[in-house]
Length: 257
Ligand SMILES: C[S@@+](CC[C@H](N)C(=O)[O-])C[C@H]1O[C@@H](n2cnc3c(N)ncnc32)[C@H](O)[C@@H]1O
Image (cartoon, rainbow, N blue to C red; front, side):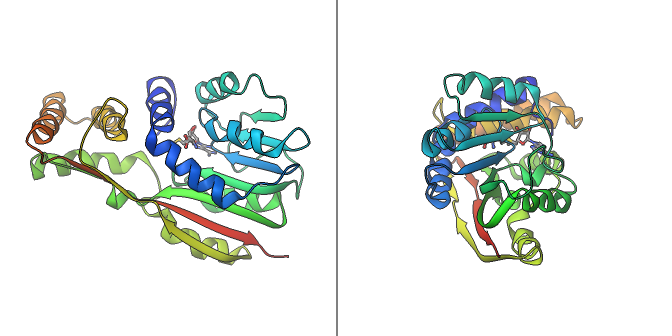
């Protein structure tokens, strides 16, 4: 899935909302940033985390964000325009124009699962990492990403279509072995799952519903089916039978000496 135009706006709304805020809090806690450090956010999107990192590393540190989407980087540039310890680079994670051993911390949120050859990117992330640096990733266990309320058959069709939106449905499971093979140690997985039973205008459920609807359309699902699905979600919410679950996992690890 490409995060351009309308999709980049939906994605930034998710990052602005409480799901985005709470996972950034967990990431910042795990990064445990010190003044003067160089920290990179891979697939930085609209730059929310890059901004928070910049405020944490101080003027002698560097907050770097990379993303291949021009729309996302424009939003990140706008968000961070008053900060002068920021570097935003338009590139993919497999080829980053940064010196070897430059970063004290490498982080990424809901990005690695969208990269087909994720091993190649992990090798590049290791190249730019200092020895003993920390790696913190959040990716979603997409098999547990689900709306509840619509009629099962229709709901399955929409979710099945959405599987094509990323390459790795269960990356947090594979990441442990991949990091271990690359020489990372002290690898930990933390459960950031949540359940929502109400939808308000700032709810990730609303934004993800729009994302699934748009994606289903791009996959050739009939427009009427998509409208029915969205209508059934509204009815389920009114009758208190609505639910939305997501299962992000925070994986942290240290690069061995
Ligand atoms: C779901 S968004 C997450 C954005 C941001 N990390 C956040 O949590 O708000 C995924 C981001 O990964 C970026 N992306 C996709 N492929 C990438 C790649 N090969 N290397 C780096 N970033 C990539 C997309 O452009 C998009 O901005």
